[in-house]
Image (cartoon, rainbow, N blue to C red):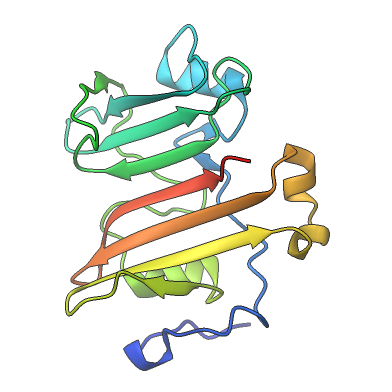
Length: 179
């Protein structure tokens, strides 16, 4: 078993020797690129392509952005972003979801150490400052040959970014990069 990374000095990982092969693939019951779960959980008839949609948590403290890429099927969500504000200034539709949580248990407020213990230490860092840091995970071909996740989804790469402020997760996003 791997020991979670717990100090700032060990945050820089050698991603060439570390394989991130167990990514989050769903959020609050919505499975990436599964139109049926998106429509059922978000209680929508359809989500059209090349569009971002915004939904608020039940208490309106969290906002979920989902995106359907051009060429995707109707309601085939390829990307999730969770935060406290709508990035484009658009209005967020109400949802019955109390809190946006990934299948691995990632949620706003998760500590950096908790996230690393859930997803392993195969990350790179970016946007680092005195009290903020973003951990980035990436899965690309041919590194995915073991699980075949990208091949099954017919997508070239998967990424996940987790932004921490004062060691608490303030915003996160994950999904497929647009091909």
